[in-house]
Length: 302
Image (cartoon, rainbow, N blue to C red):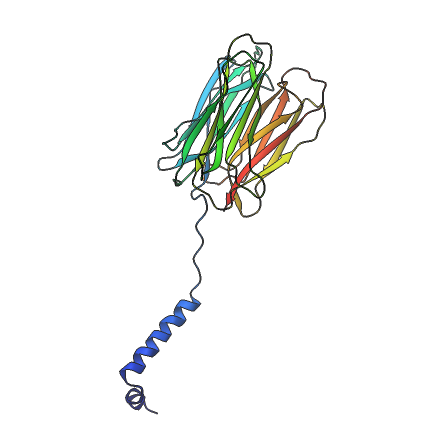
């Protein structure tokens, strides 16, 4: 059959039908585009203070323009258990997304060693509903203080922070514990702190939670070190394959203020998304008891 006879046989309606079927076939065979990341644009930014033997130093890590803070970390270099983090404070508020974290640290006992403090900011493209929530303990001279910051109903927690007020290096954060599990999203963080040495003044512990609208795949992963009386230990919590780290936490068990978490470092970099966090702790004074360290990773779908 010639082309002209075919056109006369099927007519203009037949030609239109053929065109529609061709388009439909093209749609069926077209490859699917990549799914959007649960937390797009995730990177880790760092800032380090000068090194010296001063009693106190502070540094702020700020997210690049257009990004927001979803998680935090810090590292003390050269302090080997003689330096405690007193302030670990995301900015922002209950109606404002955080964009930076400030880390301040004091010498617990005088040391002539030079040391530095590094702040880590885990940053991402803007997340819906991102805010910073705070909760404070009582203000008194008790040996132990605790506070839990919980996200508003319907939100989940991507990261956290803490602050000790009034104790200037004489208290140690023992618990920085997000809730949640390998099957459920965290929604709150509990901060617990002990006096490292007897302190007669009044002081307060504040917990900060970084909260957002629900994030696909958000969970909490736990890793625990050996339980013994060694002076130092560290442990790494790693996100499952296909997940990225948004934030983290730690917990010291059995040392009751005698161990200092010196390193709390997410991996990644300024162009690389973090996938794990390492927590490391030294005994602040000689301690004969057994203790362990837990590292918590808050992870979301890649």
